Amino acid sequence: MGKKSQKKGGGDGFLLVVILVLAGGGGAWNYQRNLTLESEQRNARPFQGYSDADLEQLAGAYSEKTDMLDRKYKASLEIRTGVRDTGALMEERVEEFERVQKIGDKIRTATTRVADSEARLREIRDEQQWRRIDGQFDLHLRRLTSL
Image (cartoon, rainbow, N blue to C red; front, side, top):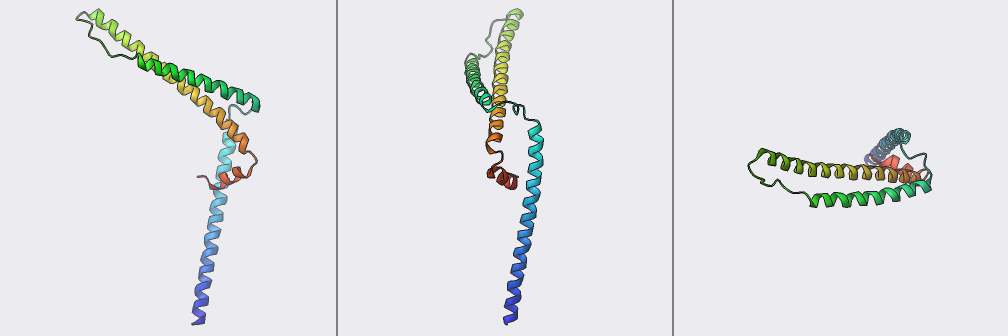
């Protein structure tokens, strides 16, 4: 009876070792994969040549610009109107169509400008984040655990 309990305990130890080896191997593979992805991203960072002070100023400027563009976008939504019944003349209907189309174009342009400004601000914030975690324990932990 004593031998059976020893074998059972030895099997549990072997299973634990296998699980630890698999977890360690998976972690090493994931770390290497994330390290490769990060090195590819570092080569494509548009703001990596800027100083920290310049990045802070750019972030503030883009934040203000984004807020201003967002206000303009919301204002353009308020002037949006539907097509009015202008009468039976074809010329009046064409003019009304052009008026509504111009309003739609203004809204699309405002939407594009807000999205572009937000994207640029996100790139600046990402660059600032890269600089904050560079060389710290969090960077290694993120490489190891993020999928």
